[in-house]
Each structure stands twice: as structure tokens, then as C-alpha cells.
Amino acid sequence: MSASFSYKITTENEQFTFDFSTVMSTGETISSATSVVEVVSGTDASPNSILVGTPVTSGQQVAQRIYNGLDGVIYRIEITIITSLANTYSLVADLPVLSPLNV
Image 1 (spheres, helix red, strand yellow):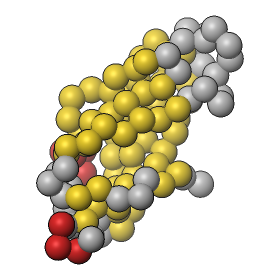
Image 2 (cartoon, one colour):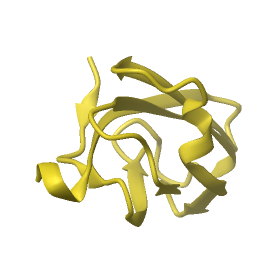
Image 3 (cartoon, one colour):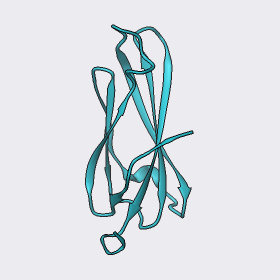
């Protein structure tokens, strides 16, 4: 089961944060993070094109900047981390994208 963000307008450039603190131990840190995107509903031949740059870590959170996207498409964003204790965790969240005219 995935979490869900409310929605994003096609023209917005927004940062979305994923909180890994519920699965990480005290003192455990994030060594690396990666992001991938897939389409849950609708059509976008290049879903990873909505990612801007690489994920940014802060404490036990990871932020990923998202830009554009196609009207009516629901994207699934997956952030995977490797921690200082060699654990691998992933969080996913669905992000509906809407045209300003459809909000």
C-alpha cells in the first residue's frame, strides 16, 4: 500500500518529503537515496522526467523536487535509501497531477 499526496498542478515546481524515521533506528543515517517514478493511472511515456535533480537527505528524511507532469496522470514516486547500518528501505507515494483548469 502506498501513501498519497493530495495533488500537484502541472506548472508547479514543488519539493516532496519522505520521512523514514518510522523505520530507521536511533542514530542510523541515510548513506544514499534514489528516486524512480512510474505511472499508476493515465499515460506518460517518460514518467521519470518529472524528477528535478537528485534526492536530498536531511536527517532521516529525503526530499525530491518534482516539476511539470501531465494532466490527469497519477504518478507513483518511490524513494529507496541505503542506511549507515546497511539497511535498504523504500517508501512510495502516489501524486495526482492536474491542469490549473481542472482544480
